[in-house]
Amino acid sequence: MGRGTFPGRIGTTLWALVWLTGIGADADAQSLEELLNTPISAPSSSEAASKYRQALGEAPASVTILTSADIARYGWRTLDEALQTVRGVYVSNDRAYSYLGVRGHGRMTNYNNRVLLLISGHINNDDFYNGAEVGPTQGLNLDAIERIEIVRGPGSALYGAGAVFAVIDIVTKDADSIDGLRVSGETGSFGRKGISGLYGGSPVDGVEVALSGLWSDIDGQDLYYEEYDGPSTNAGIAGGVDWDRARGVHGSLHAGDFSAQGMFSSRKTARPTGAFLAAFNDPAATTLDDRGFFELRYEPRLSARAGAMARGYFDYFHHQTVLPYDAIPDGFVENDSFWGGTEAQFLWDPREYNRLVVGFETQRHFTIDFDVFDEAGTTYVDGAFPFTLLSAYAQNTYQPLDNLSLTLGVRGDSYSTDDDSVSPRAAVIYKPAASSTVKLLYGEAFRVSTRFERLLDVPGFLKVNPTLRPESMRTAEAVWEQRIGSDVLGSVSVYRYRIRDLIDATVDPADGLAIFGNPSEVRAAGIEGELRAKLGDQGRVYASYAYQTTEDADSGLRLTNSPTHRLRVRVSSSRSSRRSLPPPRRSPNPSVLPSREPKPMPSSC
Image (cartoon, rainbow, N blue to C red; front, side):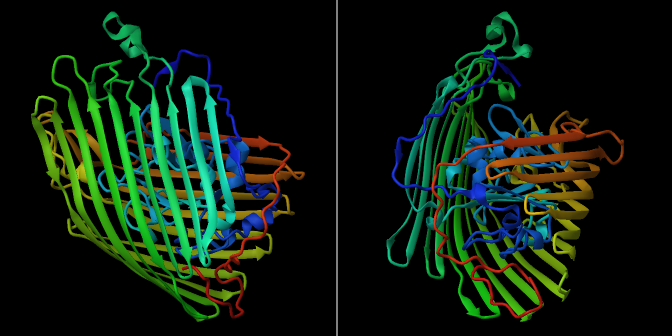
């Protein structure tokens, strides 16, 4: 990682190009008790912890919520800036991508393929690297985010492969939350400039539309790399090759029981580090990532005790990296993927203290192409790796007492590539007092090898491993959540997990070629604490601490990029001049099984 030739990054922002309405609810006025009862799902989206709407205190998982008020208060520009403030999460960056570490496990260059990233319930990982983009590549205007839900622990029982350490759901604002038009611009150090906008309204009776977009351009800074400090490599200085260009648009529509959302983002950036043995300080070294999806959803309420959801979607992913070399022709790496799927879900309350969710999902990955070639016309890799996935899941929540609920869930996934898996989960949630919640959680997760890891054959460099197995993880966790008055919320989590058949790159001593295998197991244990408090009307304090030990099960050595201690503190105090929004027109749905009294079905599954 290079260090800037300037002493630090000091950004300035110019707002108020246009402010056509008094948008921006005074979310700071929300009490912490209201935050605890926030339904952690968006209208017309799957809820990250259980695939239906629940209050935070009822979710069978350890959850942290970052609200739109948090985003505005701390000025986060990208998703990784927000996530690195969360307990147990840390971020690394190689000047091209950001990589998440969760609970002591942060493998560099894995493209975050052990975390699932959702946009209002839609999985946004690509289907070649299974990568989750959490940096500038995301292309989502953070002003359009209602909240970010970080659900820790294995989520494969609901979401399948890749939901190993966490499911992160970015819940976007609906038309009611935006209520008008806003355009803003910014400029700052290192040639930063950008413009973004939001619109929310009802152009036709019964139809609500929310739109957001952004465009950003950053010239970057000169960077110094000690490893390249020599006369032939510009004394280790990468000059003018740290620029970044990003744009994106997201939209959603609601009309009765129907809803739709779509997104497209594009980001092109320079590669100043000489990655993949490319020439150092060459302006031709670039990376381009394009992503897009469209989803249509139908959610009828069948009766007071039954609901359903059906959705169909298409996704697109394109990637290109240009690698300039001094002595050989420049190289190109290119991906193109297109896939689609359908899901049907049924929710039924056979009794007022029992809730059953059953779902089925199919995916067809029509195009997964990977090509490596050079400017002289030589093709080194020309691969196509389509596949089909069939899945089914079920979860039952039973409440024998007003303050006790039991959750059991399981999901089965069957791949046309023979990577089949069954993932169970169990949870006991007990409320010894109105202000206290104790959660005992167990879950299993799996990650199939990506197309890159399992099927890619690069002559002279990387070979295929036909015996590569999926990796699996088992996690046990105890959570205590405590509300202290109306101004303090706290939680403590203690966990243990074990990963078997960890997929990692190794070198075959027989021929010296790289190969992906299952060389080791990982075991880990840790404790995390979190405190959120109000200081008067506008002051806020957030503090978290994580102690974690993550080691190779055979050697007992600590994993690389695995800090033992993580401490985070955020403090803010401000005076809001924006007017509060009127109450939303949609009524919030009740939390799951709030009591043993009969309850209506939620309007969103």
